Image (tube, rainbow, N blue to C red; front, side, top):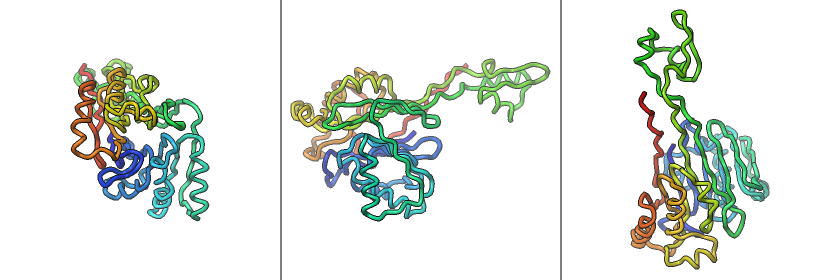
Length: 309
């Protein structure tokens, strides 16, 4: 699993930061997009992401800096011969926005577009991934998404299989998949020759929000939490009034949720490059494993290690 940050700025773009969008590449080769602010497709041109590989787009909320890039991206995906289905998930109103934009502009899509409106907290099973939503605290409906990868089968005990006389090949594959085989007159089950299951990875991507206990619940134990930090710690009142978070508030959530790593994004354009070290230090005082990302930064989420038998 790899995250690429296409836009890490706040409500308006700056020369250093575009508005919000994050691409998640999963093992199947698909790309899932989280938010699609204006000029997201331009940011993609400077990345290794391919429009045709984007199969799902998750919208956290309907403010323009999170959705104004959608019509252009959807049209370009069609122009570039993208023909596989695409599904968009987002708050109620996202369908009207997309349908109106495509209709008024006369944009024809060569692929099937499916739109799923979310009107409550829910869970979805999407292939090998479970996606949970939580309603956060913003001026309008804003969701956080928890993406949970399915557990993987445990490590095969090759030495034991050799003692049983089982040679590498299709029988190994069947056992690895959790099945059983018959060999030399005996049944060998996967449980006999595999170690503990390998837990799937978990990441949480939040939309714009104030400090919220719901985020702590959503992020509990995650490998990675992506959280907004629109303001530095001295702007706590301003952050609250505008339904946003500070560096310290985001770090406090990461600590209370016992996540492994915190990534801060949605940085207000009021802050210059020289301000970032101070903002990072503020967060690290609360939660040490914190990173402030820039546009085009990528973060790999490694698989959990396989326990040795």
